[in-house]
Image (tube, rainbow, N blue to C red; front, top):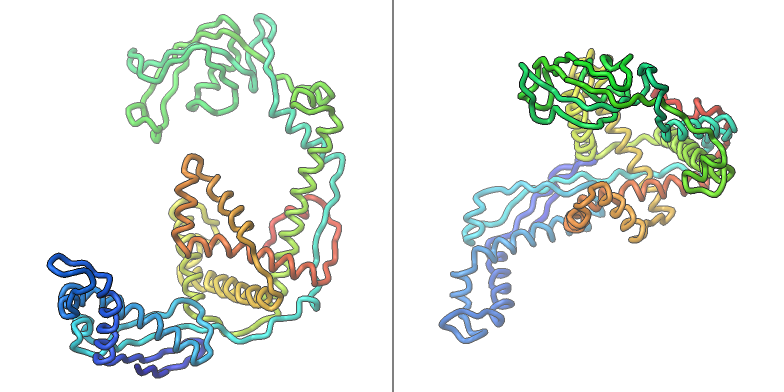
Length: 445
């Protein structure tokens, strides 16, 4: 076996590997002898199948397995002998006719290219000063949250007899929808409660119910949207014969002891306490996110080293693919629409480079500090992921268990968060009082 480094440019290394046909045949013969005692073939006693017959029947498959194993072992040996840390899976390019190699008529020769990890010394975490914005939880915030809860628990009470419906009222109606005088499927309902202004019905339907009174009958003339989900109705004009049973006005409940008990709590004080805890948790998460952003910005500014091109390309391709999907869905800013593809690619490649650089820095700082994640933490993350797909939890868990790359993607953010928490515990963290609005404001960057 011959392994020769042929190229070393930046963080890219290329090796030429050659395994003679003689060595391959010797390894094949050795492998045949290993499996021959366990082989059972019709016409032969157990373990007495001739080596020549095994070679004839299974030689091709065995040689294929040997080549795969040799390539992996040789690649690993080349990295170890040269004290290289790979930044991804090596790329293999076979030379010559693989069929002749499998038949034992030619040497196995291939080129192995691999990006290696850069050598750098990360900044001392203790030397960093991080700003962590914090905001107090005020009574005003608690009262606003309680008001939203009350709004979500609105009750509708009948209006006085003869009082017309206004925007926000709930109108209880029967209706029959007709096109050209013929009722259509799905166009009828009885005792249907419609909140005026909720825009749950097709345009014009709710608006024409404004001003109706209990006991009134009214025809609603509407046109289904051109992009309506039921193709048979799209763009069609329809008449809904409607009978109003009741007009109900919204009543926002008073925020008092009775309201709290109606939510299953013991008291209004307990409700306020739970709301305060929720706001506190939300602000703590936002505060940590801002501190993490400041930390990442400082780590990015403190490090400059060559990046493995393969890692940058992979990160860029993922970002670019996501951007293309956003563009196809029309979810991009006007500024991005006005930029050329070349400008966008240059901009997003810088983002990819930053992500790779920070990933390497955090990984190295975590390695030096012996930061580790537990199987329990991974399992909890897997359970959270599975719960996002109700009814398919088992399949999701099995998918991750069978796919090492998927498990690695699940582990990565857990590890990153633990490294970030470790750095924040060592660095100097200065708290800065800000308003809630400032805390939740998006960074311009």
